[in-house]
Amino acid sequence: MEIKSATFVVSNTDVRKCPTGNLPEYAFIGRSNVGKSSLINMLTGQKSLAMTSSTPGKTALINHFLINGAWYLVDLPGYGYAKRGQKGREQLQRIIQDYILEREQMTNLFVLVDSRLDPQKIDLEFIEWLGENGIPFAVVFTKADKLKGGAVNGNVKAFLNKLKEQWEELPPHFITSAETKQGKEALLDYIAGINKQVMT
Image (cartoon, rainbow, N blue to C red; front, side, top):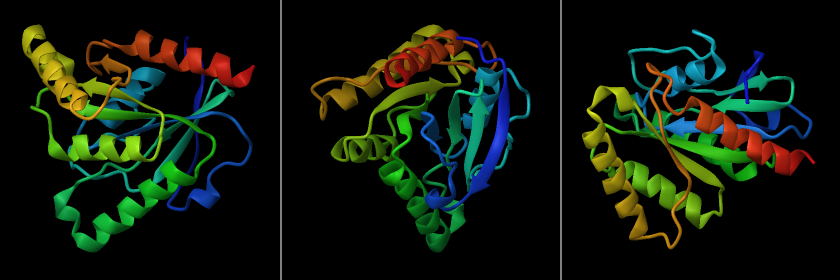
């Protein structure tokens, strides 16, 4: 699939104010500073569709982008940013949970994981919560260009092995790089495949 148009539609903190209609939505989420905005810009071929920042925890809103006039890409706030303070973290958690649990149009959630790191407890716990709530999701490993191939594959394997401790069947996963565009085609083809099923 090729993205020919990507238009910002709305930002908000309330799931009830998300766009009306029944177009499928693909939401992207991950720990702060996981490279979410860069990945979204790479997928859409637009340099500044999602605002990238060197400051973690910048996205604090649900951002909807209309893609090819047919589906929404949704940029969700990152989780686990310690410097935000207890109240701020709880508020973000509520925004994230309300969207994930209540938004019927959400077709698939992409959980972004930094491929440079050993398995992080916060990511594993978040994925466990998705499983408990029956949320359809895939794992997207980011920043694959920052390490040599063997190290990336080792970290991905370690993460998937951790998931196997809890899961009988592993979720789909993708290895990506916003710099080299690795994984772009595979991710967009995956979305196109789901669209074919839900839109017919």
